[in-house]
Structure formats: structure tokens, C-alpha cells
Length: 201
Image 1: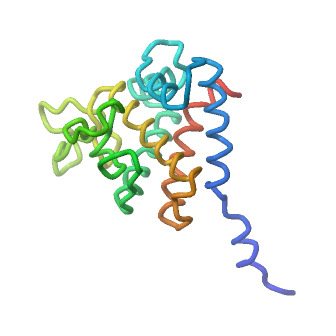
Image 2 (image 1 turned 90 degrees about the horizontal axis):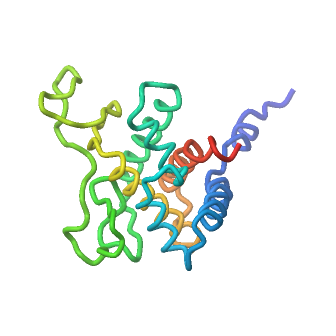
């Protein structure tokens, strides 16, 4: 009997590049219908700044970010943390953004993209003791290995801008199909599907 384990193993790998594009089309359809603005950039800015219950993406993110521990929260936190590590392994630059895409350089207000001081970190450095507990006086949200600022609006806006810029790089053909970039796409996909699933299924 022939041994085809390598061939079948290779075919079993998920192509997150194409899956992410399909998922983004779903997201694009939602915000185009929901807000009906002039262009994509206006829609992205609106999604990033609408913190009312009508923004279903933010509503789900805020629920998980500020809520009690659930398997959904653990999944989201793990995927965001893995996206953080993926972005740090690869310097990813978007044409319209001055600094590399990562959680140390989030751009919450896109109109300020040309201002270096508009890029801020949403990660609190050196926030934990040697035993893994949050240090006294640290107001952060513990994701496990990293600690984010305790501001769901700021974290959501920065995260969504990163995912959108990753989408732009992929769709416009500027993202090389490497293993490192596939990891970035994978975790962008998993985060977005976690946030969209409650109102798309």
C-alpha cells in the first residue's frame, strides 16, 4: 500500500489568503449596507469611531474585551495575541501608513496618518510581575503573554485599522505569499470571523 501522508497533509492545509478575502467581502457588504457612505475609507473610519450598539462589530468586541471569561473571549484574546507576534516577526508596511503595522504603532485617527505622534502603542510594557500577575497600579487587560490598555474603543479602532491595512495589501497584490504573511492573514481572519459570527450566522 502506498504512503500518501505528505501529499494529503499538504492538501489539508487551510489557505487563509483566499478565506480572508471571502470573509472581508462579507464585512464589506455589512458596513456598506449599514452605513451607506461615499467610499471605503469613510466606512472604515465610521466602523472605528461608532461605539454605539448599532456597530455590531464593536458591540461584539466590547462584550468580549470587557466581559467575563468565556471560550469566545479566550479565542479572541489568543488570536489577537498571535496576530501581535506574527506582526512582530515580519515588518509589514502599508503605503499610506508611516510606521510598520503592529500594536505598538496603531493609528486610531486616519486623518492624522502624516503625523508621527498620532501613532501610539496599545500594549503596556513591563506590566507583569515575575509570577505573571499584573503589577500594582497597572490598569490593563491581561491577554496572557501581553497586556493591552484597558480601553476597548482604542484597542478596537487600532485593531480594525491593522486588519483593514492587511486586507489592502493582500487585495492590491502588495503582500508576498510567504509563510510569515500567511500567519498574519490567518489571525486577521480568525479575529474578524470571531467578531462577525454572532450577527452573520
